[in-house]
Length: 171
Image (cartoon, rainbow, N blue to C red; front, top):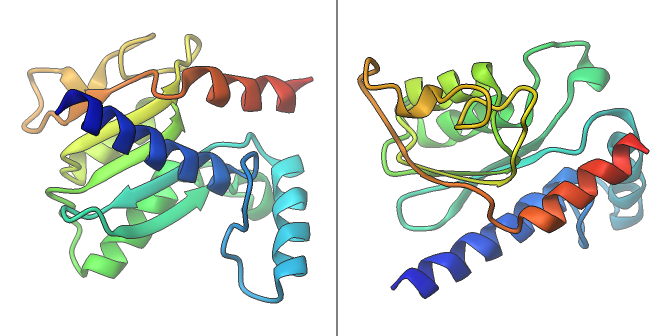
């Protein structure tokens, strides 16, 4: 069972890397395939390449997002927050109970708080973030016993690939 779960998490993380603009494949942007690929490269150059995907309880992909702070000028436009908003719109409710959030980088305090408030059941993340991580690195918001919801957490999934994508951006 653990092997099956690990394989599922790795497959989902590959999709999150794709969404971040650092993995292979089309990001699913509107327009011709060439335009989508060009836009993906532009966006990847603008903001830290973090990708997030939310899966429903049955494993169906509900929403994807990547960081859009630079493009939108919105300091809250982190991949996780945008994916939560989009998934809530698809589901038609703010409670995302039973859903899994997969993200290429350990969530910050804002994103960790948002996923707890959205009642995400499972969090899967790739690279650890020692400077701002709030899922065990600097803080541990998601496991704080004072909160009314604590998701199951799987960290370090495809960590090397996720970290390499981030290192490449900052070079």
